[in-house]
Image (tube, rainbow, N blue to C red; front, side, top):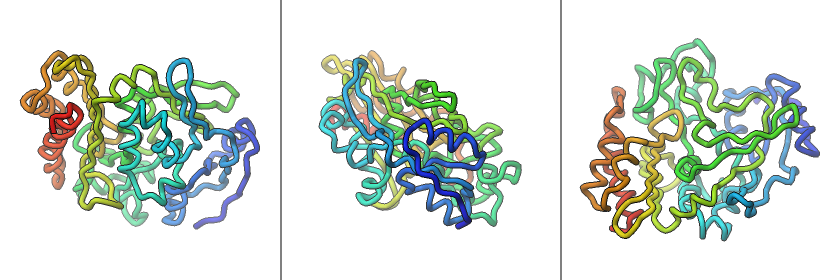
Length: 330
């Protein structure tokens, strides 16, 4: 680990200013991903700004729904009665991620910002455009079993590894941030993460120095509370990232689907909400045939690499299974 300056923020304004002033500065909260990357010499911040004492851990009702503080831990968020009652999909997704010890430390803001687990990204002896722009993508023609099948570019085939964000995409969440000039802005979750394109080093649309304050959940997303399910398929049942994840949510009128949300994880550089699958579901009756058609639509444009073609069939089967459980048919 390389030397760095440590700064403790007393308020949001001073914390943002301390990061904005130094190009290689980073916010430090739970540190469960950042510190690992520093140990591996992947991240090399020259300044860490500790924000753990800022009052950003509240989870509270608002006029428009629910505000979930960026510094609330994953554990506290998943167990909060307002989340469990109104947004159970979020609870399921958080509990599916990591271990209990990590969830006790990891914050919601940090969870959104976690970086890929691509082996080439972590190995500083191999080329990686995400780690060092212009160096190449080792995974493109290398061992790419865990990599993207949707939305990738020649510059990067890495996937976003998190679970919580998949549920947030299904719930139409927004991310509230503070900018270096003191303003606040609200970013729809679908616009928060980026596809790789020619700039895979950029994971999100945050500007340098912007601080995540809270995640906003709309009251309308509570309509999916009764019929939602989070499915995570992995090599082993714990301490493993997903090969495929599915956040499925339905709003039903009897057996007819009025609204649908289908979000895939571990298939792209960001959580992948499938408009094609949702269009195939709305207005249809629940059932395995309907869900199978939606699953086929979701992955019709998949572009598997040399070692991850299995993700197409696995993804289709996982979508059907998640929707069956969301509809309470399995």
